[in-house]
Image (cartoon, rainbow, N blue to C red; front, side):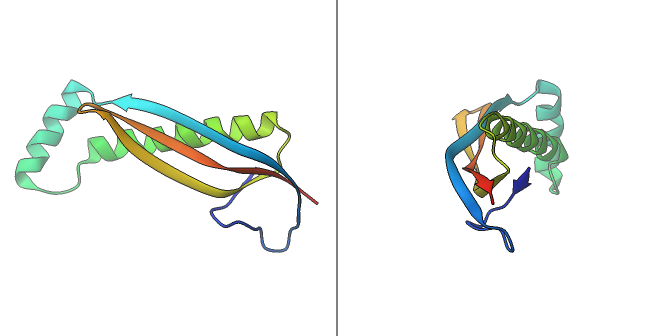
Length: 104
């Protein structure tokens, strides 16, 4: 599956636009990593526990978007975007979305 944030794929022609595809996941903070992150807040630096949590969430959202595109028979997803929103103080949603296409 070709993924791109652009609306075209260099050297390829889009034959058919299949439609919107999306994938999302909601992740909550773990109390253990929340404590460690709180300590990092005091001394500064990267909060690796949250970075790891969001990296996993992005990968899962992208995987779900790809699965939806494959079910539609897509060769690629163009115009891909990622969006994050807070659902509660302790949980966030990560959504991946784009346009599924068939290439010529």
